[in-house]
Image (cartoon, rainbow, N blue to C red; front, top):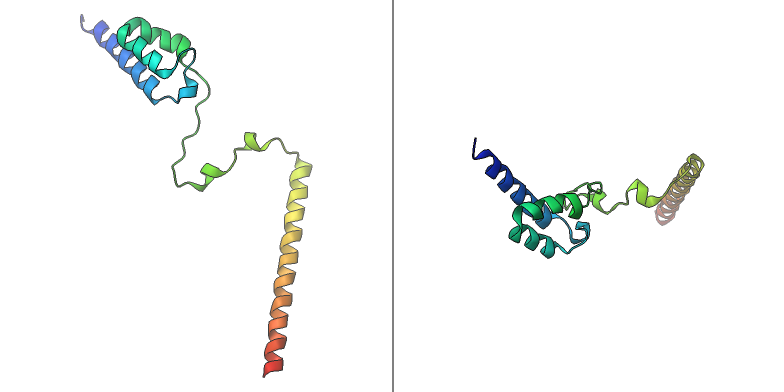
Length: 121
């Protein structure tokens, strides 16, 4: 029973150090990361508690995406801005119109190739 408290304190210190080291620089508040690391190393219990209470930024975690995932480079819905249903429908109509025009161009090009083939024969 006497080892429980030291083990919990050690887990708190290690957890604080791992959290500080793995966190991006911009998510450490009030001190740079090296300052927090030194605080936890030199004042282990107090430094760890202060890190989790004051220095830790509890912003929502980013979604981690693998390096090769194409969605990594696509903007998230919040980054794109708010779009109304009417705007989405207008975009869809423009896309349909574009594809219809592209299909017409493809048909006309195929027709031109057919006429050239008939003339050359």
